[in-house]
Image 1: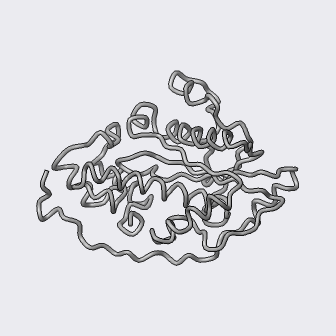
Image 2: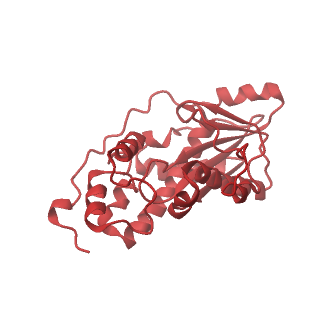
Image 3: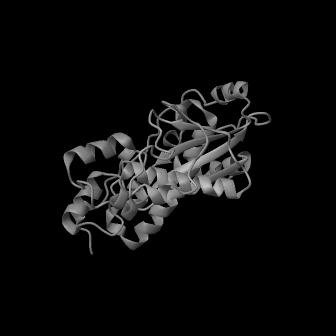
Length: 258
């Protein structure tokens, strides 16, 4: 498929928001009073995208021995090159780390919340397989989507096996304030971005190397002209105004999709 000239990517701004105050381990260390030593910071990326997986990162810290890691911020505040530089540093700094994914087909099959839980469960199982069992979880946001659903359903049953069994504590803007969660956001963003660049090679007209599957104008225009790929979340209103607005609010602009 040849992309019409009118649909070629425009040169968007690559300006990165000011990093602001660096996240610390101050909030994480309050858990020591509960006798907790190993805490897992958790964050997701790709929730508002039209295409590609939703991804969940976990970075486990040792509250007795962990020292801060310079330069780590919420992944949305870092340019791509800095995220790539920090990724191996975060993985070495963490007691254990992992990124789990749920595909577009899985999102279509079980819904976005259950897919987040599935991706998080996959990351959780990888951490456990490394011989580390976190005693508590610090999750970005206000809703605990990581723990097994209280009401079992046909869709939930396969998601629950081996899922997170540690207490989950939510905190709004934890990715901005808490170093463990910011670290999780970096490794999740880097790994998902690499996946989207690989998918871009298969469907280059959609610009996934730049927009990472989010609802940019180019992405919507090509989707309207060519229809969805196997990597699109076809159960969503892909070209609906509500979804486009949600995607852009979740970081769909060119600066975040660098």
